[in-house]
Image 1 (tube, rainbow, N blue to C red):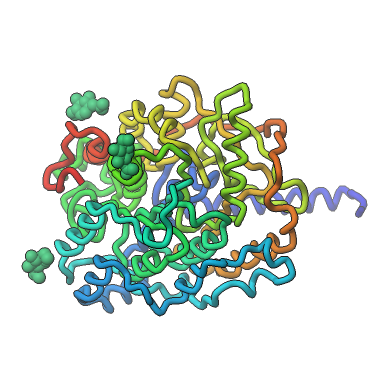
Image 2: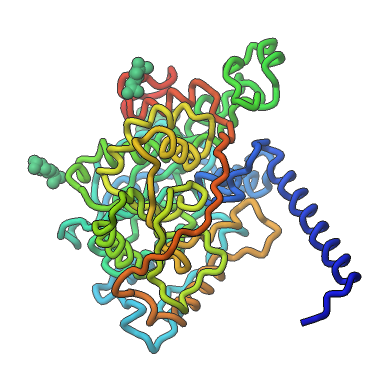
Amino acid sequence: MPRLTPQRMVRGTAYILAALMLCHIVLMLNNSKFSSPIPSYLTSGGLGSNPVDSVPPDEETSIAGRRRMASIKAIPVELLQRFARPVPQHLPDQFVQSQLPDRPLLTQQLQQPLLLTRTPFNFTPVEDPLPLIYSLQNANATAILDAMLAINAEHEILNAQFYNGPITEVIVVQVHDRIGYLYLLIDSLRRVKDVEDCLLVFSHDVYSSAINALVRSIRFARVLQIFYPYIKQIYFDRFPGNDPRDCPRDAGLYRARQLGCNNAEWPDKYGHYRESKYTQTKHHWLYKMNRLFERSPVLANFTGQFVFLEEDHYVVEDLLHMLRLMVAARKDLSQNVEILTLGTYEKKPDFTRNTAQVVVDKWVSSFHNMGMSFSRAIWDQIKPCLPAFCSFDDYNWDWSLNHILTKCTKRPFQTMVIRISPRVFHIGQCGVHHKNKVCNPALLSSKLDRMLANNIAKLYPDQLMFNAKLKIRARALKPNGGWGDLRDRRLCSSFFNSSESPPSGLPYGM
Ligand SMILES: *[C@@H]1O[C@H](CO)[C@@H](O)[C@H](O)[C@H]1NC(C)=O
Ligand SMILES: *[C@@H]1O[C@H](CO)[C@@H](O)[C@H](O)[C@H]1NC(C)=O
Ligand SMILES: *[C@@H]1O[C@H](CO)[C@@H](O)[C@H](O)[C@H]1NC(C)=O
């Protein structure tokens, strides 16, 4: 140990102060587009809380966006056809190999390093996005909308011809546009034990032929695709997209009234007007939930667990094993536990010790929004609170959920959460936005794989070990704003309340 001299202390303090100031400046810069009192993405990751990562880059300002615009002409008919028709049985695709019946599991081949079992993958999403289609100005938006609605109406379970046993769990992935992450997530799902008994649901808010091709090439489990239809690609010049007649974010009530812009009377609680790129994720989240629980004939009788993931998550192969242990253990607890949480934002995940440690605690969005799992019975408890979800002035789905689970439900929801060895990781901290950072998702995932491969014997524990509560200091929940617009609130409500008509001009009953 170096001796603590006064000089060292002074120097140390100076370093700490400098670091704090730097952090502060970075945060201020990051946050300047959306000045909320507490930037929730500091405490939580994922689509719900990190609008910066979850929206398409600004087409006007991003070079990649401009390149993309320039290269897009129209959507070839054959792409649409491929999308709408069942995939041919013999797709020459790397994913087809991955559905071989004797899918290798980590534990079955302890001798082999995991990396050897993976299909090669050279795609670098940060540098070179596949031709995602962000703007349909030059294409036939009607045709795209028709294709999406047709898929929604069909409720077709892909691969049902390969797997016909009962569905044991439903794994739901909310997908935006980061295909590189989605590939890695799918590749991790491929290795989950018993995934062939599950239904994988992919819920999209971007129409991308590349993403569709990826999802529809999965053969290792049953797959259902759903589309949130009010996507910005189609509604690019009107609500819920960016209507040019809407008020500028910072106009302020007085000038907004002078301008006579659309939503002058509906600023958020911080006086700002809506930004369409930040509102889509919450709409999508609720639309997806309502579709799964209320409008899906194929899931109407399913009473088991749903697991909720996002495109930039990464799962461990004993995910379902752990979930089943948690479901079983919950029965023996004296208290109610509504939500099971398979992921944590653990900074130092540890698989060298007992990987079966769980805690029971109050559900707090910023700690427990990753890899949530609950059943229809729990959704039925949430449902009566959805009006409050839609009127809460916060554009984050998870903070809005936190609001209703603490303020509206009979009692605050409790969760059982895996402690130091999460089975769901968030590898998307550095999304499209952080172009300067060295940030290679494939590298991150292979690091995780190595860590897991080194601790294979610790996976698949026989039983859970309950730990004492962590000392989570849940801060008082202040809404982040961004959800003051009456049109957003009405669109949100229209998903679950059929007597609430969505804002005029929008197709209805989807
Ligand atoms: C767009 O697609 C719709 C539906 O397929 C079709 O009826 C319409 O003629 C198309 N419009 C153009 C301009 O191609
Ligand atoms: C759900 O259950 C009802 C009543 O038992 C039955 O008629 C229906 O066919 C079932 N639906 C599915 C998709 O299994
Ligand atoms: C549904 O919408 C109608 C019309 O806005 C409203 O009066 C009613 O309270 C809503 N019901 C629920 C359950 O939110």
